[in-house]
Every structure is written in structure tokens, then in C-alpha cells.
Image (cartoon, rainbow, N blue to C red; front, side):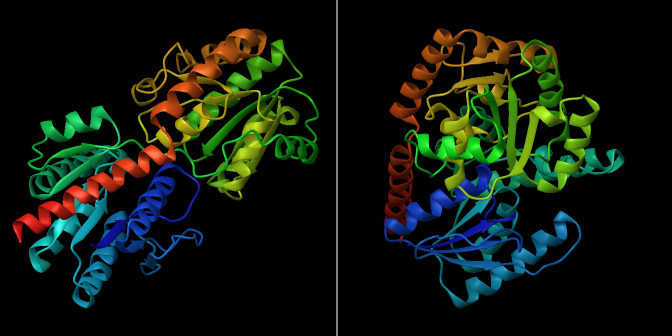
Length: 384
């Protein structure tokens, strides 16, 4: 089939949604489908196999303006190419259902984020109105999409409750597509480069944009430092423009020499980071797409300390991770427990690896994606 992928965000950046989109596109091209993708102009070039990438015009402004740009670029591409399917991520599904009426094609709505998560930022006076309008648009899209893809049972239930007419398919996000074996040499080299030596390392990977989450982690780091001053906190992520603010907070907390803030340079760097870590931490404060990172953490054979959030609790429980309340003292207590009880930590890490290896590998993800698109193709042939 010919598939047009709409991705209303920068691509490629090292975060869950980009990792998942890349895995979807690579899987589809490997299966013989022709895939074109449209994304925002920001991001780095990435190998997508036989797929082509078209970036929208570079335009500053609101999210609505960016979505309009994506719609016009997609319409022009649909005029040139007779696509069978538009696979639309989040709010780009609004454009997709409009294009469906114009070009008689099928729409897969990839429901990654709730409308409130997409439109929740900005002035408080208009935030509720924009979220409500987005919710109405989403319900309209759910009634018109030919298939809905979600990454969790919670979102599947919400899609059905909001009026999804088509089948709702639950496909877990993949782990990061990087070598998952024990990269001892890379870990040792990274420790030498950063001057960590043999000190215990608490690792965070992800976006620095969520200021509340990062503040929580740094305040927990201060409390850990009071008990074990030799521990280092290594924080590697996207949105590096936030690093100066975080460095100032670390200095205010008097832990600047114990916190290393750095950007994520490549996917290949992640295996070295994981090998250098003693404890992995995921301090979420609100629902978000974390599955790719969590599955990668689970496959690393390192103990995980995470806050009790609904999305994280879906894949993590007390049998495979240390879960805490989203408060600095609680998170610090979980980290200290992971460091002080090595037998417990090793047991939790082994159980996490076992669960992820059984159900959440890249191979299992590819199998589900290929099966889903085979069903789409069969349905298309039947209705022709």
C-alpha cells in the first residue's frame, strides 16, 4: 500500500513519539509498503529506509498555523500520489479526515496524546476553551477514522467512550532501537569522559522541557546527597535550552558538582549511558508517552525507580521496580533504597528484563504492526 504519514511535531528527536514513528515507518517499508512522511521543519535527518520525508514550511506561530501548513502540504502530495492510507498522529487526524473526503482514502488515527496534552499550554484564560474545542474535534475524528491505534488500554477505553466507530487497535510502543546488550566498554569510556570514576550513578534520560519533573528530580538529588554524597546524577536529554536553568537550580541546591546535565547526541549513546548507570529514574508528574523509554529501561538490566503515574503503572509494579509518590523525599527514598539494597535491585532488574523480553521487544512490535497493516490491506481489497 501507499501510506502518507502525518507527524505534527519535530522529527527526528530522541524522545518517545519520534522513536515510535521511526519504528512504524521502518517496519512498513521493510514489509514492502511505500511510505511518505510529513513533519515539522525542526529535527535531525534520520535513516528511514525507502521512506521519503517532506518537512513543512518553517513558520513561527501557533500550533494551528503549523497544522494548516501540514494540511496544505499533505493535500498537494495527495494530488500527486494516489495514497491508500493516511496514518495521522494526534491532531493531524483532523487534516486526515478532511483529505479522506477529498481523495477517497482511508485514515488511521494514531491516538498518542489527549487533546488537553496537546493544547494545555498557554494562557490559562483560553486553555480550557481550546482544550474543549480540541475534544469536540477529536470525537468527530474518532467517528470518521477507518482505524484507531493506541498504545495503552487507558487510551483505548477513552477512544471507545468518545465514540470511535472503527476498531481500536492496541499496539505497544517499541523500545529504543539501539543495541541492548551490556555495553561495558561504552559505559567505562563514558564514566572516564565525565570524570565519574566508580561512583554510583543515577541516570535520567528524556526531555528537559517538563520543568516540574526536573525540579522534582533535582530536589530529590539534594536529599540523596545528604545521605550519600558520592552519588552522581547524570541527566541526558533533549530540549538542551533548558540546561542553564537546571544548572542554576542545581547550584542553588548546592549539588552542581554532583549533577551532570548533557544533551542526547545519538541513539547509539543510550546503550553507553545505560551501562554506566547504577539506577534508572523516571520521575513523571503527569500522564505522557513513556513506554518506549520504560521498555528500554526494563531491557537494560538496571533497577528502575519511578513515580506512581497511571501510564507508568501499566508496565511497572512493585515486582519489577521501586515505585514512589511524586514528592522529593519519596523519590529520594526510593533511590537510596535501590542503592542500599543491591540484592533487591538485582532481583527487580531481572524481573523487569524478563517481562520486557517476553512482550516488549522490537521484534514483537514489528509483528503487531505488520499484522495490523495486513488487516487494513485485506479490508481494502474486500471493499473494492
